[in-house]
Length: 312
Image 1 (cartoon, rainbow, N blue to C red):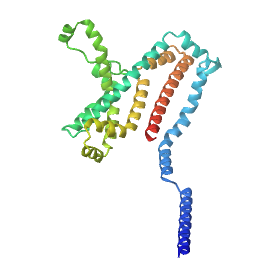
Image 2 (cartoon, helix red, strand yellow; image 1 turned 90 degrees about the vertical axis):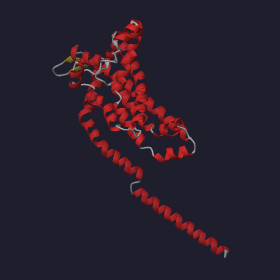
Image 3 (tube, rainbow, N blue to C red; image 1 turned 135 degrees about the vertical axis):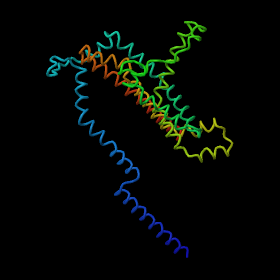
Image 4 (cartoon, helix red, strand yellow; image 1 turned 90 degrees about the horizontal axis):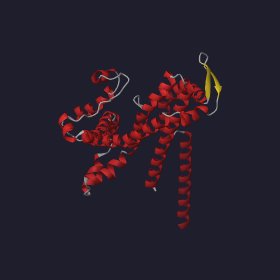
């Protein structure tokens, strides 16, 4: 009987192994769930990939070559190789590039965390079931639509190519009470708050989408265990929306670095189109691009390292 039992067990395990092998072979022949998702992502990305290959690849190579060359004849766009002369000029002889570069980086690194914190707070407030929730969402998103261009030029009477340049101004009574010294110290802070308010519309929408994707059962289970609102925020809300935080962080960085009211972008455009110095402008653009690329890579690396430590 024992021998028969062992033989039956052996036959069963043999059948299971054959079934597993057949299943593996079938999975190898067909697409797995991850393979389907990768294929769907490739299908959605295909228009961008095709457009980049057709319209941008040649322009990128021409720009890189231009940054190491000098235009000899503008009509035929004839270039002569000069090596790293353009890069040496912008770092050692251009008195405006590095101060503007440092100023833009400093303002961006200060404004980005403030925008993220402000957007998350506003998103959490208007995500609650309060009367007029849709109205408040619209109010916070309107600056994205009206923040620049002709409409804002008519509202604030500034150049159509500009952006919001008017900050929160103190009333005359407070101006007289506080004095010029204190008002001068407070006004930059108020201007920064205004810019953060006008630059936070998209981030609020993305945070709202992330918050609405969190299951309410997680919060109900936490309440049953006696968790406070503060503990639920740190243990449930923040980990669940961490991909949205990364997305908003990268989006905000790129938004500030490529904004039309960015002083460095203005300086590069002025060098290219006003001074007709295309080679030096190309070198400035590639230095700026490489810094942004490295910074975004560092952000992704830190986030990935943090997620691996949490899994471990």
